[in-house]
Length: 338
Image (tube, rainbow, N blue to C red; front, side, top):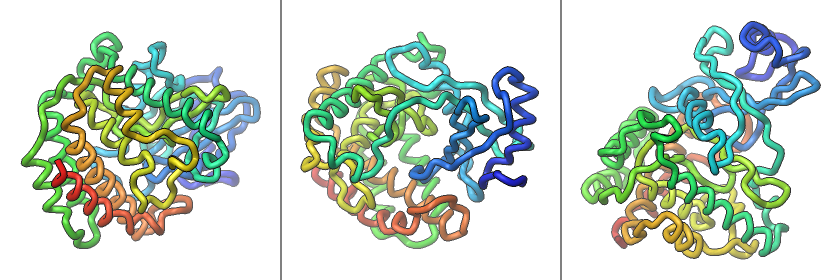
């Protein structure tokens, strides 16, 4: 690497690639900075001193076969450009691993705030917190109302059997990334597989929809939805179940920017608005919340596994492993409540 490089980005090779592929895009030497906060794919701000972009690439080291799919992220954001779902503009996908050692893509740097930390949200006040929350749910409803075929995503996924495949997939992911025995994990995965609900309507699913995967504009509206690495065609309630889990309801999370004492409305109220907008029955939602617990537990175990190998970049990884068993326990309790 040359001076000024950051782990995962060779600036000289990146500049050469962009100069060849998009000669009018970059006007000078590049510099890059890792964006802290994400624990899965790596995100960097890249600049030539005049213009900024965001670069996304998979994590260093151990990478699961079906995870961290740059082509998936790039395709869905490109398809949603111009729809009622705000996304950054994309500037090309590079699948040649000879450039940065892994596939990557560049996208527009959208102005706004990612509310990832408690110190950011505790001073918002109830009016701003509510405005952000309502638009967050509105955008999710608009996403699930889009006809995939109309935006060129008819073959983006297979909605039939989506939930069955999801349970099987995350069981496989856990087997590939576990470094220890996890109490209750097999019971939860088996219970989920034995009680899969019927999908009411297929839709474009984000896969990790939450407050810190959107960029909030100065007017407190959602300026862009980001982090589409898990997007597919599937059951829209899987997004709703995961959003409910994140919505201030899991005390073991190392950081909880969404809390009722900060002025955020309760998740149940938001889900009621979502159900009305999306015309969906939320009676089976506890299954989706239990599945969200299992999915987040598997993701956390994978991050913990990479951290033990010394393959993570940035800070904040030491607490991730401690989230896994509490998530599994909550998932079991939620599934039994159903």
